[in-house]
Image (cartoon, rainbow, N blue to C red; front, side, top):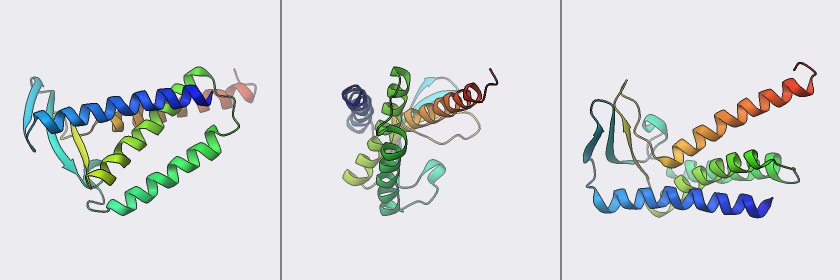
Length: 154
Protein backbone atom coordinates (compact mmCIF):
# COMPACT_ATOMS: atom_id res chain seq x y z
CA UNK A 1 0.00 0.00 0.00
CA UNK A 2 2.76 2.47 0.93
CA UNK A 3 4.57 1.82 -2.34
CA UNK A 4 1.42 2.68 -4.33
CA UNK A 5 0.85 5.77 -2.20
CA UNK A 6 4.42 6.90 -2.80
CA UNK A 7 4.33 6.24 -6.56
CA UNK A 8 1.00 8.04 -7.09
CA UNK A 9 2.11 10.95 -4.92
CA UNK A 10 5.31 11.34 -6.93
CA UNK A 11 3.41 11.15 -10.23
CA UNK A 12 0.90 13.83 -9.18
CA UNK A 13 3.70 15.96 -7.72
CA UNK A 14 5.65 15.75 -10.98
CA UNK A 15 2.57 16.76 -12.98
CA UNK A 16 2.08 19.78 -10.70
CA UNK A 17 5.73 20.85 -10.79
CA UNK A 18 5.98 20.30 -14.57
CA UNK A 19 2.89 22.45 -15.18
CA UNK A 20 4.31 25.26 -13.02
CA UNK A 21 7.72 24.93 -14.65
CA UNK A 22 6.23 25.24 -18.13
CA UNK A 23 4.24 28.31 -17.11
CA UNK A 24 7.38 29.82 -15.57
CA UNK A 25 9.40 29.17 -18.75
CA UNK A 26 6.89 30.08 -21.45
CA UNK A 27 4.89 32.91 -19.89
CA UNK A 28 5.78 36.29 -18.47
CA UNK A 29 4.62 37.24 -15.00
CA UNK A 30 1.03 38.59 -15.14
CA UNK A 31 0.67 37.48 -18.77
CA UNK A 32 -2.74 36.02 -19.60
CA UNK A 33 -3.70 33.71 -22.46
CA UNK A 34 -7.40 33.16 -23.07
CA UNK A 35 -8.22 29.45 -23.55
CA UNK A 36 -12.02 29.50 -23.53
CA UNK A 37 -13.38 33.01 -24.22
CA UNK A 38 -14.94 34.67 -21.17
CA UNK A 39 -14.41 31.54 -19.09
CA UNK A 40 -10.86 30.13 -18.79
CA UNK A 41 -7.43 31.69 -19.15
CA UNK A 42 -3.87 30.87 -18.24
CA UNK A 43 -2.70 33.80 -16.14
CA UNK A 44 0.76 33.58 -14.59
CA UNK A 45 0.91 35.07 -11.08
CA UNK A 46 2.99 34.68 -7.93
CA UNK A 47 0.95 34.09 -4.79
CA UNK A 48 2.64 34.73 -1.44
CA UNK A 49 -0.59 34.01 0.44
CA UNK A 50 -3.34 31.42 0.38
CA UNK A 51 -6.49 31.50 -1.76
CA UNK A 52 -7.45 35.05 -2.72
CA UNK A 53 -4.03 36.12 -1.29
CA UNK A 54 -5.19 35.60 2.30
CA UNK A 55 -2.27 36.04 4.73
CA UNK A 56 -0.11 37.42 1.96
CA UNK A 57 3.60 37.27 2.73
CA UNK A 58 3.28 34.69 5.54
CA UNK A 59 5.76 32.30 3.89
CA UNK A 60 7.04 30.65 7.07
CA UNK A 61 3.54 30.23 8.48
CA UNK A 62 2.49 28.31 5.36
CA UNK A 63 5.68 26.22 5.33
CA UNK A 64 5.27 25.23 8.98
CA UNK A 65 1.52 24.57 8.57
CA UNK A 66 2.14 22.40 5.50
CA UNK A 67 4.66 20.31 7.42
CA UNK A 68 2.28 19.92 10.36
CA UNK A 69 -0.63 18.99 8.08
CA UNK A 70 1.48 16.43 6.18
CA UNK A 71 2.40 14.77 9.50
CA UNK A 72 -1.19 14.82 10.78
CA UNK A 73 -2.48 13.27 7.55
CA UNK A 74 0.12 10.52 7.72
CA UNK A 75 -0.23 9.78 11.45
CA UNK A 76 -4.02 9.90 11.70
CA UNK A 77 -5.28 8.90 8.25
CA UNK A 78 -2.61 6.77 6.56
CA UNK A 79 -0.27 5.08 9.06
CA UNK A 80 -1.39 1.58 10.05
CA UNK A 81 -4.55 1.88 7.93
CA UNK A 82 -5.70 -0.57 5.28
CA UNK A 83 -6.55 1.94 2.54
CA UNK A 84 -8.53 0.93 -0.53
CA UNK A 85 -7.14 1.80 -3.98
CA UNK A 86 -9.43 4.82 -4.34
CA UNK A 87 -8.38 6.15 -0.94
CA UNK A 88 -4.72 5.67 -1.87
CA UNK A 89 -5.24 7.82 -4.96
CA UNK A 90 -7.14 10.49 -3.00
CA UNK A 91 -4.48 10.68 -0.27
CA UNK A 92 -1.83 10.81 -3.00
CA UNK A 93 -3.63 13.78 -4.57
CA UNK A 94 -3.85 15.48 -1.18
CA UNK A 95 -0.20 14.86 -0.27
CA UNK A 96 1.10 15.87 -3.70
CA UNK A 97 -0.96 19.07 -3.64
CA UNK A 98 0.39 20.08 -0.26
CA UNK A 99 3.94 19.11 -1.26
CA UNK A 100 3.70 20.92 -4.60
CA UNK A 101 2.81 24.24 -3.00
CA UNK A 102 5.30 23.63 -0.18
CA UNK A 103 8.11 23.14 -2.72
CA UNK A 104 7.14 26.41 -4.42
CA UNK A 105 7.20 28.30 -1.13
CA UNK A 106 10.59 26.88 -0.15
CA UNK A 107 12.23 27.28 -3.58
CA UNK A 108 10.68 30.55 -4.77
CA UNK A 109 9.11 32.15 -1.70
CA UNK A 110 5.70 32.09 -3.43
CA UNK A 111 3.34 29.70 -5.19
CA UNK A 112 3.07 29.74 -8.98
CA UNK A 113 -0.62 30.05 -9.93
CA UNK A 114 -1.98 30.04 -13.47
CA UNK A 115 -5.50 28.58 -13.80
CA UNK A 116 -7.81 31.57 -14.14
CA UNK A 117 -11.54 30.84 -14.21
CA UNK A 118 -13.02 34.11 -15.43
CA UNK A 119 -16.28 34.01 -13.49
CA UNK A 120 -17.13 35.75 -10.23
CA UNK A 121 -13.57 37.13 -9.95
CA UNK A 122 -12.44 33.68 -8.78
CA UNK A 123 -8.91 33.23 -7.40
CA UNK A 124 -6.19 32.11 -9.79
CA UNK A 125 -4.96 28.68 -8.73
CA UNK A 126 -2.77 25.75 -9.83
CA UNK A 127 -2.97 21.97 -10.16
CA UNK A 128 -1.76 21.41 -6.59
CA UNK A 129 -4.69 23.49 -5.33
CA UNK A 130 -7.04 21.44 -7.52
CA UNK A 131 -5.59 18.18 -6.21
CA UNK A 132 -6.16 19.32 -2.62
CA UNK A 133 -9.75 20.47 -3.18
CA UNK A 134 -10.75 17.35 -5.14
CA UNK A 135 -9.17 15.03 -2.56
CA UNK A 136 -10.71 16.78 0.44
CA UNK A 137 -14.22 16.86 -1.09
CA UNK A 138 -14.09 13.19 -2.09
CA UNK A 139 -12.59 12.10 1.25
CA UNK A 140 -15.39 13.93 3.08
CA UNK A 141 -17.98 12.22 0.88
CA UNK A 142 -16.35 8.81 1.45
CA UNK A 143 -16.08 9.50 5.18
CA UNK A 144 -19.73 10.45 5.36
CA UNK A 145 -20.74 7.36 3.42
CA UNK A 146 -18.61 5.12 5.62
CA UNK A 147 -20.07 6.70 8.77
CA UNK A 148 -23.62 6.05 7.49
CA UNK A 149 -22.73 2.47 6.49
CA UNK A 150 -21.16 1.76 9.89
CA UNK A 151 -24.18 3.13 11.76
CA UNK A 152 -26.54 0.76 9.98
CA UNK A 153 -28.30 3.50 7.95
CA UNK A 154 -27.75 2.17 4.45
